[in-house]
Length: 208
Image (tube, rainbow, N blue to C red; front, side, top):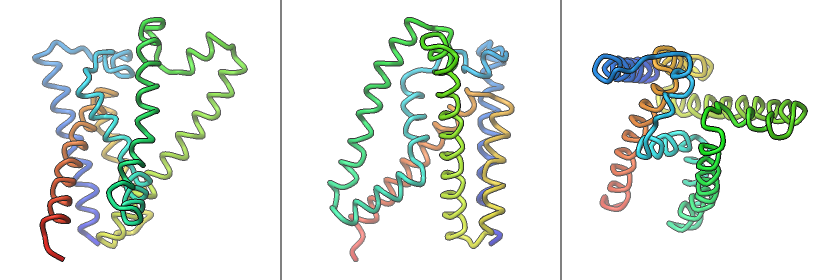
C-alpha cells in the first residue's frame, strides 16, 4: 500500500519540480514575464510539437485506455486502430476551427466568449452550464480511473488516491499556469511512449 502513496506523491512532486524549474529557466534566460494573461494563455505562443504532445497526453485517459484494450482483445489490431481513427475527425475539424478563431478573435480566451459575442447571453449561459458539467464529469472520470489503477496496482485506499492525485497538478499549475500544464503534458507523453514501446515489445517479442 505504501508503494501507491510513493507513486502518487512522488510523481506529483517530480512533475511539480521539473515544470516549475523549466518555467523559472524560461523567466531567467528567455525573458518570460508571468502575468495573469500569460498564466491563462501561456503567452499565446505554443508551437505545434508541444500542442501535439498535449493532445496525446490529455486524450490518453482511463476510458481511452480501457476501451482501446477492450476492442483490441475482441478484434485484434484493427480494433484500437479504428477506435483511434474516429477521434481524428474531431482533431481535424477543431484544427480548422482554431485557425479561423485565431484570425478573427486573436485575444479570445475561451469558446464561451465567442458564443457570447455571436449568439448573446442566453446561448452563453447555456453553453457555460454544459461546459461546467462536462468538466465535472471528465474530472470525476479521470480521478476515478486513476484511483482505480493505483488501487489495483498497490492496494492504496481508493478515496486517498482520489484526493492525492490532484495535489501535484495543483502545485505545478499554481506556479506556472497553463504553460506548466503543457510542459507536464509533454513529459506525460514521453512516459506514455516509453511504456508503449516496452509493452508492445513485450507482447510481440516474448513467447507465451
